[in-house]
Image 1: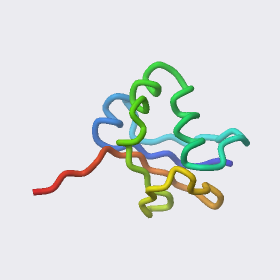
Image 2: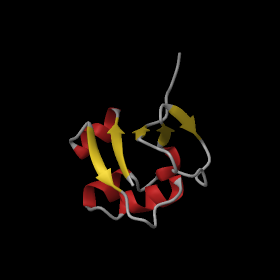
Image 3: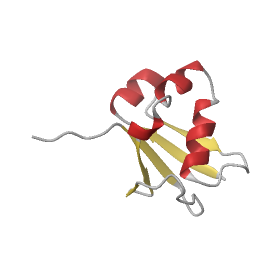
Image 4: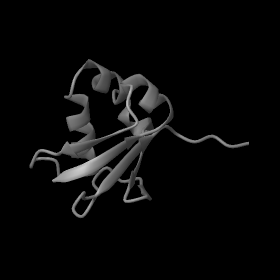
Length: 86
């Protein structure tokens, strides 16, 4: 599956990229699978996704909280840190 991956805030800064088009392996079916795959892509990715529970994710511009969420039909997946408000 080919998807556009978007990176925001400190994730973008640490990876030194705003987005990329990626061909996900056939084994990547869920958000949890995607996070595990991201960690395997090299030292920078491993460091960014080390504490993956704090990384927030949106699929096709809709936030998802469940790591078991299926990626089927996804064309865009965004990664961003927790938001704070005031």
